Amino acid sequence: MPEKKAHNPKEPKIIPSQFQRAKEIIWDEVLDKIEWDSTKEPDTVKYLGNEIINGKLNPDDLPTMILHSEYYPNSIQTAISEIQQLKEVKNMTCLYVSFAKDAPTYGPISNKSNVLLVGGPGKVGYALTGTGETWLNPGDLLYIPAGTIYEEVTTGPRATMRFDL
Image (cartoon, rainbow, N blue to C red; front, side):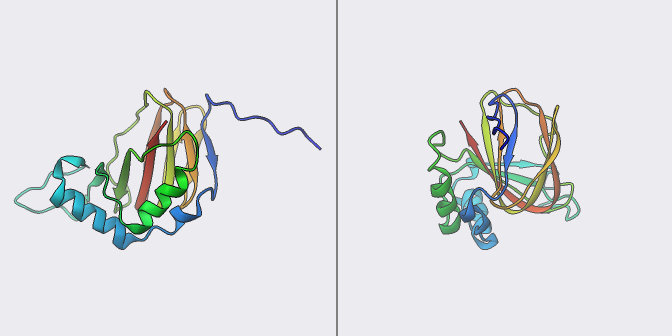
């Protein structure tokens, strides 16, 4: 039997279907979090995309929202609790939410710390320098080491949890 190769922590790695509870996050609770963060803690919400003009969003260019409050409705909290069983993980850094294909993103970025991304509802791609494109489905875990340049590829509605290590 071939010897199993250990993962190099300086390389990105995807582990499919790692977290069952992340597969069970429901959109109504994602929308509840958006409403809470937007009305109760507006300083914890960042929008990427078109600005609101005359009180209206262009429906063809819905924003991506980055939610930072510590309010987590039931299915989201249950998923976070499952993920926190990994010894390196403490708290969720943020929840990314997009509603449309080609939704705005940060563009190519890198982080100063190692990052875990966990897929909630929907699907999102990541173009990783040196690795190519990979897709994150509900329950999948994507480890991105510090300094790796990557870019999100949105294909439709999705919610993705981010944990800094």
